[in-house]
Each structure stands twice: as C-alpha cells, then as structure tokens.
Amino acid sequence: MKKVNFVIGSTPALLIGEQNDKVFLFIHGLRGHKEEALAFAEVAEPEGYQVLGIDLPLERKPWEVLPLLNEVREYLYKNWKSVSLRANSIGSWFSLLTFQGEEVERALFVSPLLDMKKYIEEQLTREEDYYGWVVNNPVAHWDAPTYILRPEVDQIVSENVGSDFILQHRCQVTIMPDGEHWFHTPKQLAFLEEWEEKVLSGYKYVTLRERPELKDSAAAWFHSKWRVPEAAYLKCMEAYLGGETEYGWYLCLDGNRIVSGMGVIENDFHDRKDLSPNVCAVYTEKEYRCQGIAGKLLNMVVEDTRTKGITPLYLVTDHTSFYERYGWEFLCLVHNDGEQQMSRMYIHK
Image (cartoon, rainbow, N blue to C red; front, side, top):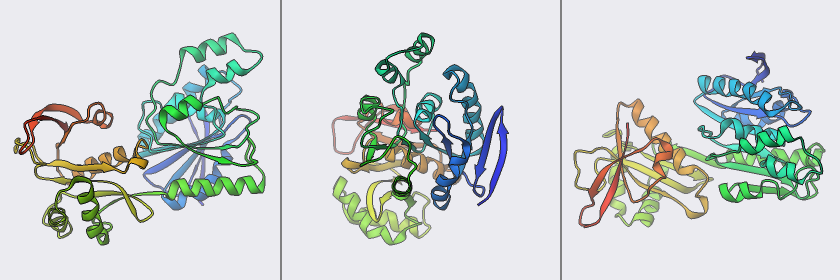
C-alpha cells in the first residue's frame, strides 16, 4: 500500500493508496492520530478510494482548528473529483463545521459528537468562550448521505447528543451491542470493519453500457414506476447500447437490485421541443430516499453528457427546491402532452 507523508499548510498529513479521483478524509478523535487512517484504507482502497489522514490538535479551540481544516478542504477539492469523510467522535463535529454546504459523496461517522451545544449543556461545567462560539457557529446546512456507527451505550457521548441531527438528516444508524465509545478490542474492530465494508460496497452507480445485461430488468423497472410501455424504454436503451445515440441510462444498484434510475431522451412529453435533451424517468425507491442517491445520479448524468459535448440539459418536474441543490435552475413553465396543467422546466448549463 503506497503511503506518503507531507504537510498541508501546517497540518501533518498521510496519503494512502494509488492515485485516484476519489478520496476519503479521515479525521481522528481526541488523542488520535493520522495513522488510524491506515486500517480504514484497507477497506476503502479496494473500492477505488485514496485515504488522506491528518493530525489535528483537537485539544485546541475550534476557532483555532477550523482554519487548519479549511486548508485541508481546499486541498481536497483542488486535487480530487469526489470527496468523502470518515471521522471519529469530535472529528465528526469538525467535519460538519468544515464541509457543511460542500458536495460530499458520503460521510461515515463512528461514535460521533454531532451536536456540541447539547453535549456541553449536559456537562456540569462549561467554558463560556467555547460555549458562546458553539452557539454562534451552528451546523446550518448538511446534505451528504451520512452513516453512523455507535455503541449501544456510549459513556462519552449520550444518545441525546445528535438525536435531532440524525432525525433531521435521516442518517443510517448502526448500533453495536456491548460496544464502547472507542472501538479498540478485536471484536469491536471486526464489527467496525464489517460496517465500513457494507457501507462502501452497498451501492453501485453505473451506466447501462457498463451493465448491458440489465437492459430488460431496467426497462421493466422504469415501466413499473412511470407506466410508459416497456417497449419504449427498450427502444431508447437499445439505441444507446448500439451506439446510435449518446443519450444514456443511469442506475443505482443495491447488490443486484435497481433502487434508483434516470435516463436522457430527446423530449420528455412536453410542448417545448426546442429544449432538448431531457433528463427523464427520475425515480428512487421510497426506502432509499434522503440518502443523496438521486443527487449522485444527477451529477453523474451531467458529467457524462458534458464529456460528450452534450450541454445544457433540461428536466421537467413538479418538484420545487430539490433540483436546485444539484446546480439546476428553474427556466420556465411548459405544457405536458395531453395535460392542461403546467409543469416546471429546469436547466443545467
């Protein structure tokens, strides 16, 4: 496993793995160190990620730590296309502060401290300057799919700390019976590694050209969601697979199950034939929503079509405030074929 020690600004860093366009930032907890990232890299590298571990002086004040993390954040987005987070304990809180509002592929938090305000309020004493800073610097915006592993009873961070965050952002929580805040015994470490492997390998994002054997099942799946005839989907898919068009089809898989998908076609059944091509058939299974899956697919579509010189893209929807998260802008209202009600047309330039 390739390992390189270097410094980002004034922060010691350890980069693990061969060059890739995806990276995990590993942020340790109190009294931790960047070498903890080595164990996680054993799981992440086979899934196509490099791992960057950093040493942070977490005993210092947050207003002293955040400038260091901001330098690391800028370095990450300058050098990788996809950024994910893996953090322990208080490192999770620093992750939220630093990366709120940024595009994060996924976040894996272990025994996380998610709500510093509530954590301090549970303590018998408090430093007023620290508490005042926390109150004035909340985590205001978080969209990343977030996976949490915590012990059944955490003696350091109570279950109440972060419970509101977990509900608000619909985090996927796994609980280890008889675990501890610090996962360190052989049994705990094995449980941790199994959890990391499951999260990283759970979903696959593919084009139909990458998985052409899914053509029939994909056509049936889209038909079941939108009631457009399977034959219509098959015709578009076969043209794509045969190289007649670059308007593709995109899927998210949980194992071999299609859980989300969308395609690109000339016109999505509306009267503005000049606004083309259109992203169509956007759907995510109910139990898989609020995990960022649709957003990941939308970004995948935009990137794939842009590399082929296909831009801008258009999309018809009745939703508001969803597509804006992923760089889409409202353009105009259009009439759907055979309907009186107007629908919203979005554009991604």
